[in-house]
Image (cartoon, rainbow, N blue to C red):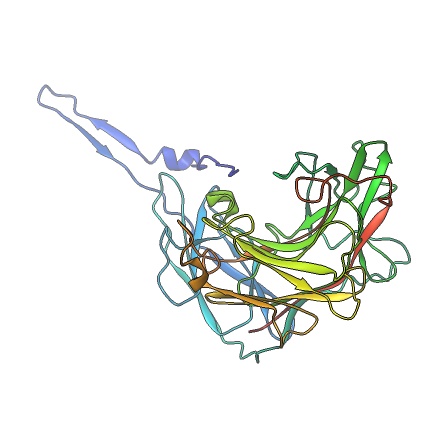
Length: 375
């Protein structure tokens, strides 16, 4: 999944590398080679909320790879690989260096962040505000899309469509994802023709990521045969270690029509614990359903992932590194770096099964906001 690029070496640099050969019979050959050094990373940041920062790492050396640490240690090629801008909401120091094939590694760049943000402070959000008077594109600085009809490893039936796509069966005139004038993100499941389904899968991959904090999605989901709404996270390192080694955190996930009681499932997945190994059902009380508005939350800290519905003071499950005990080959992946966010509405697949004649189209998943609070 990685795109490898050849190191771009200027002609003027190549001309500085000589082969000097002696002219006499006793003359020998000598080689003088000068190695190019990768340009040290630049650490830049933009304001998030309440003093938090979104940090970006760049280098001017084409094709270089950046590694970084957040604990004050010197980075190496086994440190976190930079894949996307990341949220900083605590006191820490970013150390980064860059490498490229055939070149000398850069020096280390260091940047301390002394933010002093109290626990529980809102530090980043997308409120899906829209004052344009018409349906609008989700913020392109935050959201991109998975597209196509590959089945997504679950034999799903939908064709995921990005904003503005008019490639059949997608339609720019009837988008599957948009921010409405009501201030909600709309993710719309449609059936443009018999047996053909479209929907949307938004993600922050490559644009925004975070590690640790309290994550919330306030949402209202459709409930009918074949619908599979979800709000979840994957590790930035998925491009290098693949799934499930990158880790998956499922904050909102359910399928099909409402049950009595209705439910949501909070799960974590990683190497040695996929499927139903570490998943817990939350039963809504008092006749509530997932079709009503609810806040789906995760409290993520080192060695721990907890899930809650509506009230962060009462998580319904907490997973820790101790849950790896007894699971053959299980490796806890959630302290290895930042994660990106995914919001989607799948149709059909191995879990929910196919829609039936009672499944209403179009149907939509509404998202009021996505928020992150400091731990």
